[in-house]
Image 1 (tube, rainbow, N blue to C red):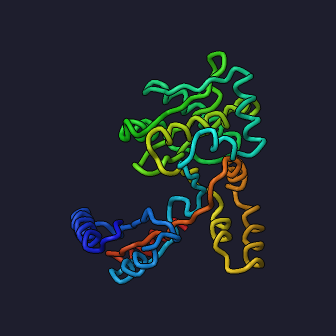
Image 2 (cartoon, rainbow, N blue to C red):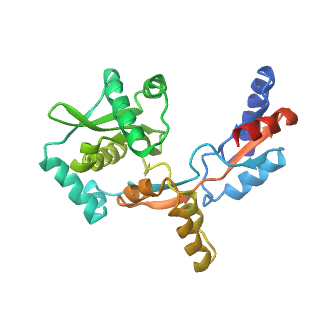
Length: 271
């Protein structure tokens, strides 16, 4: 969505035409706008006036963004002591990061399967990752951390013109022990900076931490931080926060409903 509602109106009319032609039950928007953006309140109000209603987004609402407007040396110096040590350890142990090609999506997927089995999170089918990598070329990048011919960790990252985006990644047990995952993240951050990105988005932390960042008082902040400890993403957050950056939170998602009875049925089935 843009800062100009005249442009947004044109966009919504186009979406509505497609939705009606496809007999859509509802349309969902997830604006790429932070709650802290200057025009966030105006955009929220405008969408509500167009007949949208707020819902929880599909994508993570809270994340960590790292500003890239400094030197690589300064970025590295701001990582936690442990993260810097892990990156150096990976280098000492012979871990090397290389850029993958289409054929390497298979190795990437094998790492994702190993990660899914270890920490019990769902992954997409291989064709999904193949499509994501291919459709966004050359602004997508596949990075693999290897040692002695073995893939220890793999990341798939993207550039949207302003932000480097860490969408998908994982590591084997040996990848975690060797620091390969940390080395990959450092390579991804440098890639985003070289592509001219302003920030690097680590993509997804417990939403309670995003709410805590703007809590009105210490009591509420502390309660939200305690709640976050039970979130499945808390381990991911600990990994991501070691690279620095700022916790930010997006606006919610917005649904425009065309057939309310079917919409309510869909919502119930989706929980």
